[in-house]
Length: 362
Ligand code: SF4
Image 1 (tube, rainbow, N blue to C red):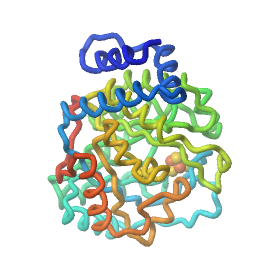
Image 2: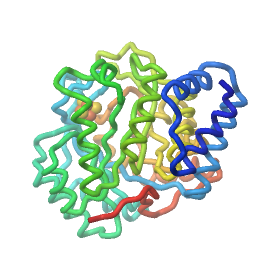
Image 3: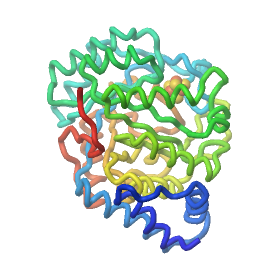
């Protein structure tokens, strides 16, 4: 395969509507070639073309999402996750409504205009409790977007929260391949339901974020190709990917982490194929490499998601080992990120940062 020509093909597919989506086979071959072979020319070109596409659609603006990790209780037992229900070493916590509001207060003063309420699937927070928190935030900060990231629920709950004012929902599909999905999750979880949730969220009117882990155990290049094909069906507003990083108290503790190079390759491919999507440079990328997030931005990412959770609970939301930014106050995080982003030639902006992928709030 001519890798340089294929980069052109990826670009055309993203930029021209009606252009055929690349084939599974060629996607898998290309990902493998650029990740594993020493084809530096293609690697560099892929990343720089991706950055150019981001510049065309979003300019040099990098959007902030203030992450509030409000509970680390979870009813699920995903094999890769440090807060899975079987992990008896996890020090569990829940934030009160007042604590969540105080995170938003701090964030608002610092310029955040999106709050992401993220947590495990914790049944303590009833649908009505979540709706009440959303209403409160939207009432106090009507110019801010509220994002929920609390897992698989039924349509009724999603609708309730949407009507309460939630704007966005993040639910990574993690892998679009059934067999691979079952290798990462216990039997009671299934990919079909996860996919169904994503389409339901879109149909309700949320701006939807999905995504996957790069380098997760047993993943093949064909799995990654399938992820891209699934995302093309879903057409999400945001696509979040990060390297798999093992956690010491999980069945995957001895598995190898995903690589920086492969994650950058996937970010760049996503940017070429989905030019209007928001793509974060994730904390996990910053965990496997000191300047991982900066490199993610240079590969086409345009969102960063610093932590707004109270410092005393940060270390308890350990989805994977060695997670960064668990000791700094919110203000320090912002200053640190501003400096990092500046080095890439981009700038953090205080804006809601809605996706350019079409959506209409009902
Ligand atoms: S990945 Fe999410 S759903 Fe799975 S155990 Fe962790 S918090 Fe729960």
